Length: 266
Ligand SMILES: C[S@@+](CC[C@H](N)C(=O)[O-])C[C@H]1O[C@@H](n2cnc3c(N)ncnc32)[C@H](O)[C@@H]1O
Image (cartoon, rainbow, N blue to C red; front, side, top):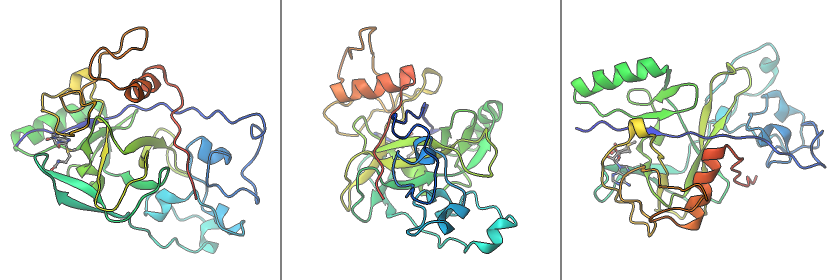
C-alpha cells in the first residue's frame, strides 16, 4: 500500500470594506457572509451568539458538526446544537481508490465538511510516516499551518477527498471560540455548485518535500499530470505549462498570501 498525504497551505486575511470595518457582530448581524466580522476573519461565533438573534447565528458550522463544544457556565443556558451531518458518502472511484461524493445539491459557498483528526507536530508527522510505512498502512494527513492533522486512525469522511487540478472544494483555515489560538481548524467549502452524485475534490498542492509521483486521474482539461503537483509559475505569474488562467490565480493567492474568498451564503 502506498503512503498518502495531502498538504494545504492557506493564508486568509480579512479585508472588510470601509462600511463594515468597525462593525461588531451584534444582534442585527446574521453571521452568514463576510459582512459579519467573525465570518470575515474565519472565526466561529461563540455559542451564545445564537440566543441573541431572531434567526439564530449562521456561523456555528463546526459546533453543529460536534467540533469545539466546551461546556461553560454560560453555555448551560444554551440549547445543545442538533448535530448536522454533511450531505456526502464514500464510494469507489475509477482508478483513484475511494472518494467522497455529494448525496445532495451543494451550493457555491456552502460549508461541506470539516477535516478532523489528531493534531500533531512536524516531528511527530515524520515519525508517524515511518511507522505507517513500516506497517504498510496508508497515511491520511493534512497540513493545517502550525500542525499536521493526522486522520489516519481518528479522521472523518473528509480524508477520502481526492485531488483534482480543477477542484470543486477549497480548504479554509478557521479559528474556534474557546479553543487554543494556535489550532487551525479546516473546513471544506464549495467553490462551485456541486450536483448530487458528483465527486468532491480539492487541490492538494503538495509541497516539494511531500510531492509524490502518482499519475493524476482527475480528468480535467488543465490537469498537471501528477497528483498535487505545483505548476511552474514564472515571475510574471504566467503558468508555464498546462495551466488555465483560473488555476494561475489560485496559485498566486497561495504564494503571496492574498485573501481567497468564497462568498458564503446562509
Ligand atoms: C487522501 S487519499 C484520498 C482517498 C483515497 N482515494 C483512498 O481510497 O483512501 C489520497 C490518495 O488517493 C489517490 N488519489 C487522490 N487523488 C487522485 C487523483 N487525482 N488521481 C489519482 N489518484 C488519486 C492517491 O493514491 C493519493 O495518494
